[in-house]
Image (cartoon, rainbow, N blue to C red; front, side):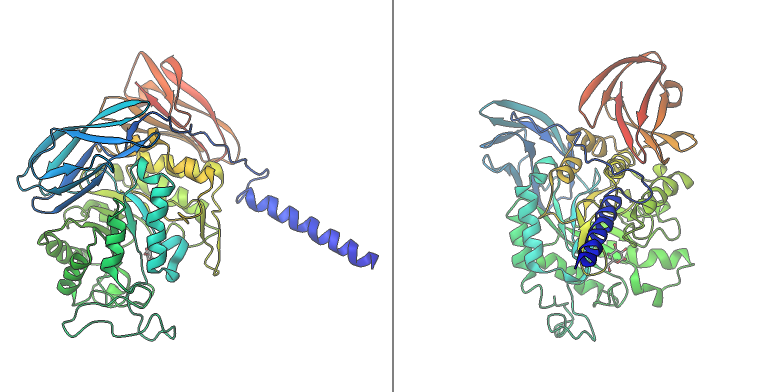
Length: 515
Ligand code: GLA
């Protein structure tokens, strides 16, 4: 018996050791604490999210003003053009604009503690996605188990978690909503299309229109996914030779976002030929442009043919710049540095992103995500790696699409996703992606020029131990005495001459604003 207890003790000791080293992240010696840097939002109104929004003439308009602060909140928009109105209780701007032009409005929000005002520019023309998209996607947490119920719960969670108050707006289904030929699961089989060739959803999505209505009724937008090939990456029916019908269907169903994933299109086109790489995207964007509905087009073809150089020309509003960041659960930390930092410096990707079209290094992998073994598990990214991902994505002007479990957000995860000063960098209306200005050993300094003339600066440490990182004014193209603010802590640090040095933790970042 004693032997049994000894073994039990040994076993639980080993288990403890395993748990501690797991939470430490790959390669770390000591576990990292989840330190929350983002201050709690003030109870007074603060207007967040994008300051500029593009719409095409004649398309239905839906934009929810993002504002933090105590409820109830009253909303008002001054100088709103004819055709649009703002609901004073919900802050949703709806209607239709017929005349192209630039409309400068002022958003005013009021609660019992005060009023906040901010400029909001509506640009009616042929450009959408004037700042990077913000939202949630089902793939990394629900993969092939996604359902209508999950999507509705995600929309509810985007509201109840407060993410909507920080500018998040898209709720996007990824793969696995259509019929899967050859499947044995009864919810996935059926007629892939009706007699007119219109695509059907599978049994897990009984009524797509009702689902997008549900999402829209919460002031949010809905996204869908398909492939230009005959089958999606997970083997579900997709658009090949039914592009016209499928776009019609997506419009009818009320979608606002389309991820168009290459997958089986290799059976149709030759990946080595630029014309073949571009062809399906040109075809689909031409069809999208003819619709009286604004649908964001997200190209997903893993960066083939240097897509950043032509993604915008073929009608993309964003284009994935690499393969799947979370393809291997254990490898996410490594992928973050490879697909984020290295790819973005290898070919000066910053030159190609801007208002209307953005480089997309894939989703934010925080909170609970799939471990590809049938379970969800806490992200393998260490706390500092999570700060690094969100900071880098903001500097390079990447879409902020969270793909963990939005219904199970812990305080730390939410604090990373909702730091308004970092989001403001991501959503800066000038739309100039940042780039690396210096590198020394394992440390790198990245900079993004902002509309007000200030600079967002990331001091990154890719090394295995804490290190000092210095940003010199010379590298940043400035001189003299400058103010420095810590953006994660939302705190002014002071005035500095010629340079600023900070200690940065392993795989971590210090995000600054310098002006
Ligand atoms: C590809 C894409 C992923 C995801 C899956 C779905 O791997 O790159 O983002 O959409 O397909 O099958």
